[in-house]
Image 1 (spheres, rainbow, N blue to C red):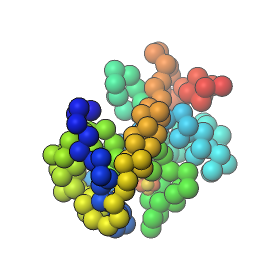
Image 2: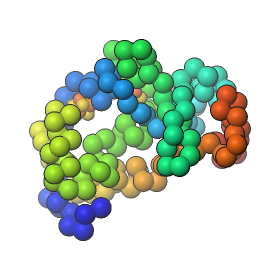
Image 3: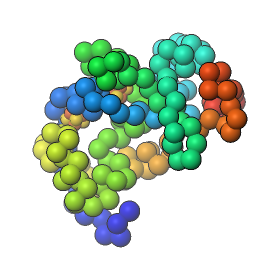
Image 4: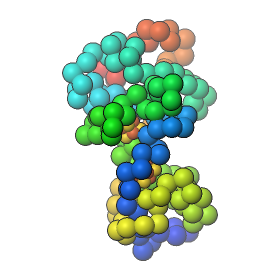
Amino acid sequence: MASEIFWVGGLPFECSRCSACCRHEPGLVLLSREDLRRLLSHLGLDFKTFYAKYCRLTPYGGGIAISLRETKEYDCIFWKDGCSVYHARPVQCRTYPFWPGVVDSRTDWVREGRRCPGIGRGRIRPRAEIEEALWEYRRNSPVLLAAGADPEFPDEDSILGR
Ligand code: SF4
Ligand code: SF4
């Protein structure tokens, strides 16, 4: 992070529910261990069923991470006229736009504002809220498959930390 925090006085953000961050463009929604646990519990599914139906793999950080699938129109698999897992949505979704790389500098923030119409409008989010989101984001790094794991049937105990 840049040494000088430019958002000491907070940042304006109000989601306009345009859905641009959930659909129409290719993207990754990387899942942490906690994300997976929460989604399994919310949907009442076992890991194998959830993994086969909703997940895909992607290179990440020198390893292989688990992302949500997309439809062929590049909508998130959970987009159904809104987020169908809203109360269990991944940390990546719930902390946006207060991500490292977006709030590192004013330039990053302004650049992200070209993608997200909620940035720069509405209520001022206080510093404490931004710090909380950053902490939540960092604490929930994407879970990686163990080296040599079978990508079709990865070991769910190691993924879920059991
Ligand atoms: S792109 Fe921004 S304004 Fe649009 S739904 Fe996502 S967070 Fe909300
Ligand atoms: S899980 Fe929900 S909030 Fe996250 S990208 Fe998918 S539809 Fe959007």
